[in-house]
Length: 272
Ligand SMILES: [Zn+2]
Image (tube, rainbow, N blue to C red; front, top):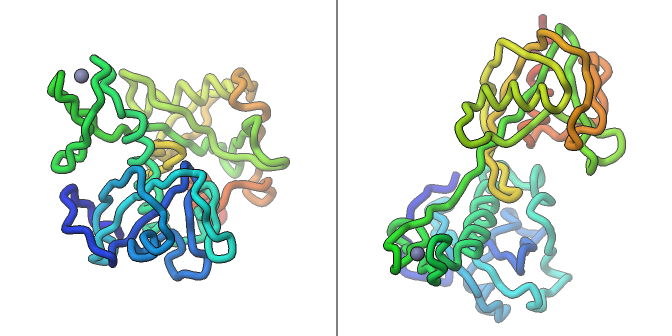
């Protein structure tokens, strides 16, 4: 697991770098840890960092997020470039979290180049891990957006929905962002009612997952159906239906919290 720390040790050619060319992750598919590239290699390749951010220590080795220009030439024989999502489930969860942290912090740095209050260019304050405005003397910290994700169940059945951009035949659990002033449980009841028109109770916390697309924290819950007919009110869900545990459609992989909720629920129902 990544050991978080704000202050980096002196730069070394042994440092690990998670390299993004623009927004594309650069990885070495033949390496044991494909998204970690040594600083020595970054220099050797002539990849000039435009933005760099210390992430912490990976197996006691300092680890950095490094952004290079998206136009930089990258040898396609040695490296693959692509969306961060492509390594989800292909590298272990702890390493995915490192790449996810790198992506989120680089995006945050870019989006806070200027102060939102007075438009002064902001400076990175490494000790605080914050963007600092010298004019207002204010700090802006990396922003995480909480969202709920919930599996609604009714006996041996589960309620799953389809978003408009899902691959054909794919269904998933329901999700939505926590609004200002809401608790996660209030968000859950509101989102389920808005998206599929049903009421739920017995909300049970399952677990959480960092979801760096771009910067969510997914809070996973089970919720028991109480009343209402399934009606899709929302353009976020184009179709929703009940499925028996023995006849599930194509669902997300277990590496995502949605897939983990479904797999866990199915095991529980089967063992009852
Ligand atoms: Zn300011």
